[in-house]
Every structure is written in C-alpha cells, then in structure tokens.
Amino acid sequence: MKKTVTRFAPSPTGYIHIGNVRSAIYPYLVAKKDGGTFILRIEDTDQARYVEGATELIEDTLKWLGLDWDEGPIVGGENGPYFQTERKEHYLEWAKKLIKSGRAYVDDTPSEKIDEYRKADERAKVPYLYRNHRPENAEKSPEKNLALLGAGHPIRFKTIPKNYDWTDEVMGEMHTGPEVCDDIVLIKKDGLPTYNFAHIVDDAEMGVTHIMRGVEYLSSMPNYLALYEALELPRPLFVSLPHILAPQGNKKLGKRDGAKSVTEYRDDGILPEAMLNYLACLGWNDGTEKEIYTKEELIDAFSIDRIQNSGARFDEVKIFWYNGQWIRRIADKQGIDTLFTRTEGFWPESAASEPEEYKKKVLSIIYDRLKTLSDLRTMTEYFFIDPEVNLELITGNKFLKKLSESELVDLMTMTIERLNDIKDWSEENLQNELNALLEKSGKKPAEYFSLVRIAVSFAPFSPALHQTLTVLGREKVLARLNKVRTALVNN
Image (cartoon, rainbow, N blue to C red; front, side):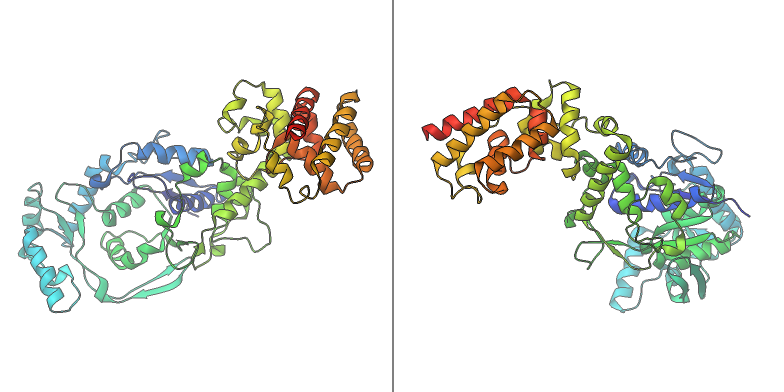
C-alpha cells in the first residue's frame, strides 16, 4: 500500500482563520492515524497579497495547536523547497513537458485584447471561455512555443473539452461536462505559477496521496483533472471539506460574522486543546455522543467517511464551553500547578507582585467557573486589592433589600465577633462556623451568605464563601467586614 501523505498549503496573505485551521487539522489527523507524513507547504506565489510575518504566524499557530509537520519550513525534508517562490524551475520544467506534448502554449495576446474578448462574450451573453479565442501560438509547433519562453508571456494549458467523472470522498460521485474546461494560465507573466498548476506539480513531486481542501475548489476540478491527464499523473484521493458557516447558517463564515483569528482566541485565553477539539468536531463526529477528545483520541477516532457533507455552523459559545471543560480537565487530571503554568499573562495587574503560591490558591477555588483564562482578570481582582465599598450592592440586592440597616449592622457585628475568635481558619472549620452563624442569624441562606459574600468581595460572582474566606485570610476578611459595618453605621 502507498504511504499516506497529506499536506496543509496555506497562502501567507494575512491572519490564519478558523476555516484555514480546520483545513490543517483534518489532513494532520489522517496522516497520523495512518502513520504517514504531514507536510506544511507555503503557497506564496500571489505576491500582490503577500503579508510580511504571515508565514511565521501560520507556523506559530500550528505549533500552538500541536500540529507538528513532518516536512516543511524549519524542519526541512527530502521534497523541498517548501515555498512555491523557491520552486520556479520545477514548474517551468513541467510546463515545458506540456508544451512539448502540444498541451500548452506561450500566449502573446495583449491584455487589452483579452479584455475585448471578455466584453464581447458578455455582450453576446455567452460564457467567457478563453479556449474560444485561442491565439495563433496555440497551433504553432512545440519548438516555436519553446522559443518564446522568457519573453514575459504567460503559459496556458491547451484544453481538450470533455466529460469528467470523479469520486470525492466526502461529496460522493461527481460529474461535469466539457463546458467548464478552459485554457487556464499555468505560469504568469512574472514567471510564477498559478495555484491551478503549482499545487498539482507540488503534490505530485511530494507524493501527496490525499488532497483535502474546501468545497470552493470543486468548480475547478475539471481543469485539475485535465492537467492530471495531460501530465500522465495518477489522481490522488479528493476530500472536499464543506464550509464553516456563519452562526445564522446562511453563508460561509467570514470576519464580518464575528469570527476572530486563531491568534485572537489564543490571546483571549482559549486553550489549544479546546480549539483543536472544537474545530475537529465542527463537521465531524465518530458516531457517538462523545464531545471531549485529546489529540491522541482524535487521531485514533478520526475517519474521512465521518466528515459531514454539509456546512457546519460556527458557534463561539461552544468554543467557550469546550474551553471551560478543558480548564477543568487539566486542573482535575494534571493538577493546579499544571493549569497555573497556562495562566501567565491572564491575571489582573494587581496580582503582579503576589506570590505564586497565593495565586495558585486563588486559582484552585476559581478554575471551575472559568470559561477562558482571561476571565481571571475580572473574576479575581478582589483577591489582590481591597474592593471599594458600594452599599448599593447590599441595599439593592434582591435578597437583602428587605432588611433594615440596623439588621444589616447587627448581622455584620455578629459575624465579625465570631470570626475574630476562630483559631482554625480552614475551609472545613469555616464552613461549620458559617452554618452556625446562619442558624444564629435566623435568616435565609440567600440573605445571610449574600451579605457576607458581597462585604468581602463586592463582586457579582465569587466561589463558595468558605473557600473565599479561607484564601483571603483572617486579616483581609475582618478588615473588609469592619469597613462595611462602619459604612453601614455612618450611612
């Protein structure tokens, strides 16, 4: 059996999009499951759209997700170079082969003339096909066409219109007629190849067995098949990946639909495990109800025949759900110390000078409420700086607004006196003491616990009260409670 070889071949034209990344994940999983090779190739022939630093961003994103490539930039390989701009001679040799066989020609038609052809066809309301306007060079001998190489003219394929049938591993049996076959450009005036030609040459030379890309390329398949045929190349397996759709499900996901770059999600505190898990399952499942997969589990479970043939809706809420699941999984299975190593850069500025051990204690009681690591900035501020007293949060609280200020002062006094006498400031003992104070207060749990929680945090959310008090420590807790009692007395 032929060794499985897959590739991810992005263009360095900007940030790496969610859809781009899924087109890397699937070929990676296929290659790894089969013990094959995963290649990273940079298709940088569109120099007009080239963005400085985009290649490094692609590489960094793949590394972050754990999608290590076996051949490509940085790691090298026997099939390099892996930048198309460094492979010009390869494409020219294959183009010469087509010229010699009479299946390509040098096109010396001026651009203005080509525009005239297009406009004339528009006026006649007929499809514009360049093969209907072939120049004289198309009929000249291979020798005369070869002699024109280097004169700054493009090289075009000389198509033979016909029916084509092929199998797509996701979309099924496909068929197209001769009306879509055309004399496409193989090599442009600047000597660089078009995507239509370059990817076929590169895939052939690199031994790629599975071509996995978006369904938008289906319309170009007849021309690709014609090139395989003319170059006497075997067809690889074609795997068309349906679009990731906008949340409304009515169109392909775009930047205007709120989808951020993978880098932005990373900066927002999304874990690579969560992003990999979410994108792999966006349009694929293994036939079970399982949702959480490690990379190794994805490799083991993945199969092309389980890729759905319709678009999958992008759901940012689901990304956050996956992320929360992975935050808890890492903490529960690998420990708080491991999760803590992921939190650098996500704490509030007020935590900068705090000892690691204290921040780990905070993390240990807050992690199960996090959706992203960036939530730490807003959810833990009161552990590091004393919050401003805002009595409206107490008097306006739905559980406390029925209590008089004298009742609130009495409850605060009772709590301060008891907590001040506690010798064992541990979670278990504080839980018992709080329960005893609740019973003594004669109030409902929502009333009493809400009062103490707000008084020590003035935050819309906090972990379990006994855990919060334990981590804050006796000195901070009593100081904050006294401050609130004073404010209530002087209100």
